[in-house]
Each structure stands twice: as structure tokens, then as C-alpha cells.
Length: 206
Image 1 (cartoon, rainbow, N blue to C red):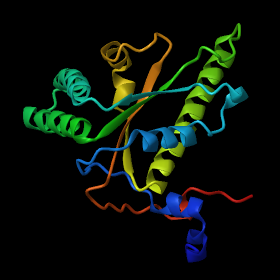
Image 2 (cartoon, rainbow, N blue to C red; image 1 turned 180 degrees about the vertical axis):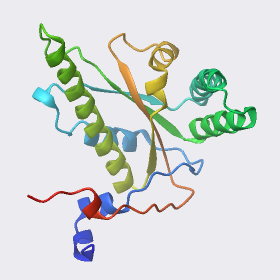
Image 3 (tube, one colour; image 1 turned 120 degrees about the vertical axis):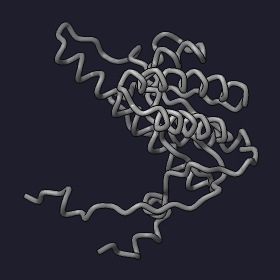
Image 4 (cartoon, rainbow, N blue to C red; image 1 turned 90 degrees about the horizontal axis):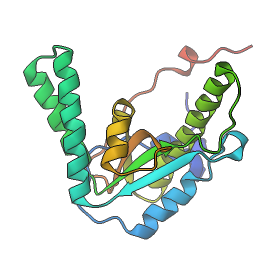
């Protein structure tokens, strides 16, 4: 049973009450708020303190639509190759396009290996890459919590993982920037609540 007294902590309040929100009001998000959220993101811990995270902030409606269209085309192609029914494909593509284009702000979360260590063997290089992924994900979590704390809402979308080259090309990103996630951001236009499994399911005490 949760201890309600924990929620008196601003950090724990954000953790317990943050939700993934997919519908936003059309209000403009001030640049200062976005910068504050990004400042919180880069306070995350990182392997060797190399800070491999990179961020692309998209405010232009034209850029959102172009990116959503390109990603939707690739999604449709992949689902057709999987022999998914056409009506399901149409719904998935339409839903993805709407989520991306209706958000006031998009943040593409990327990682770069440029400052990470390089080893002569594949095992350690693979682990180095995983450390960069973990570090970047922690920055993303900071970003989500900071958005909630400032009165905004957000949602993490993994779609860029399936089309990293397309995203990099469409946004003219540096070659070493590897897209990991797309985060939508704005003032919430809905409330959502999803249950969590009991703690006992995920914990072993020794």
C-alpha cells in the first residue's frame, strides 16, 4: 500500500502523478519553459559523465507535418509487408500522424557515441553503447518529469527507433546523432490514469 505522505515531496509528486498524455491544447509553449525542461534533462547521470544525449526541438508546424508524413509512409510500408489488414494500417498511420502534428512541441531524443569509449572487442563496445542508451533514457525521464512539474504534459514515442535514418535525413541531423525517441509536449487536454502491477511482481528481496 502506498504511503500518501510520500506525495508531500515535489519529486515524488511528479513521479507518482505524471502520465503519458496524447492530447494537448493548442496553446503556445514559451521557449523559456522548453529550455528549463531541457536544463533539467541534462542533469541526468551518464556513463563516464560523457553526456551522450542530444535534443532536436521542433516547433514549426510544417516540420511536424513533413516528419509525420515521412514516418507514416514508412509505417504503412512496414505494416503492409506484415500483411496487416488495410483498415488497421489506415488507423495506425492516421493515429500516428495526428499525435505528432497536433502536439505544440516535438523533441527528438538522440544519442551520440562520439565521446564514448572505444574498445578493441565487440563485447565492451556493445556495453558502451548500452551505457549511452541508458544515459540518454535517463535524460528523457528527467525531461518527462520536468514537463509535469512545470504544468506541461508529455508522451514518449519509440517510433524513431524504427526509422532512424529517415529521421536523421528529414531533420538534417549530424551523422553521429542516433534518434531514440520522439517526445510530444504541450498543455494537457485530457486526463489519463493507468494502473501499475503490484510491487511484489517485480521485486525479489534477499
